[in-house]
Length: 386
Image 1 (spheres, rainbow, N blue to C red):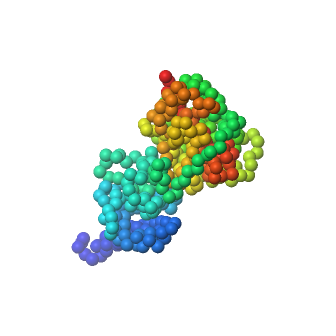
Image 2 (cartoon, rainbow, N blue to C red):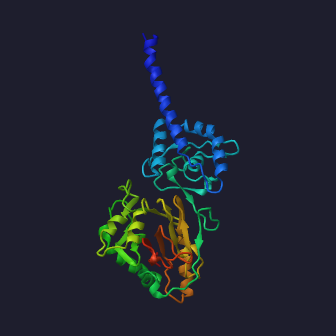
Image 3 (spheres, rainbow, N blue to C red):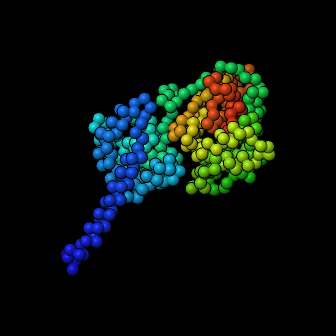
């Protein structure tokens, strides 16, 4: 009975349908690739066309569910399809080079100018172990590491030569900068205790917040200070999903904006709406990293990204999809020791970072100071007890 042609026909039909769906997913993924890099359009498109067979061969190694996850992630630009897509770490042979599979996927769908694995950094929600024989190829589980000493193409830096007065700085800068490290921590500790009601959960959090966050619209602080206890924090406009683990928490700028008691300017509302997925802050052993998940650049300054005697800090542009270590624990400790021996002539906080969404500030902009930016964050890091 099972040897008859009629009994074999459904099996052949199912196999054909399965292969056809995989082929369609592979084709759609290929069509979603980034084919243009500014300044080298023809070269990039030609290089991708010559590697089409190798790419399709690699994609066909994935399961149908993996291909579907990859397509959802690419089409939604990381808003959906957050599952890992694991493949063997074997290199993919292209006509002129061999690439790790995750580098190939990130080059196809995010950064055509990507060349080396060390230029990538795994996002905190990627659960794949570094010791695994497989590697995650979801392009939205990786960020492009921004090197301040050798900037990649989308990167720029704007030095500030002007010296600003006490009134030009954010209110927290003047208050914190005039205190020594121990009293500065007491100020932050007392400030965060008044905002404990905003904490999401007591599961998996530290006894003390490692960072306190303030949200600013121009020179007005909006909402209470937010204590950050968990290893990473997602700050978005209103697209944040509930935390998936005890290691993360979310903060909605849209919710904070509703606490305003006065109408905001139109420029503030426009900028706020562009925040989108915003940024993710991640505390690690080597410092604090910022991942830009929005579709617009963010601008950052930090005392540990400059030398110890710089007062008007350099402003760094972090492009969409890029990550930057904005605070270095070890360097901050050295700076605190330096300023104890050589006190600065003006108030200066070695343990705070400013992040502006969409709009930059500095010499190359009409906005000279961060409190002229429509929407910005101020990160106040905990100073270790002496």
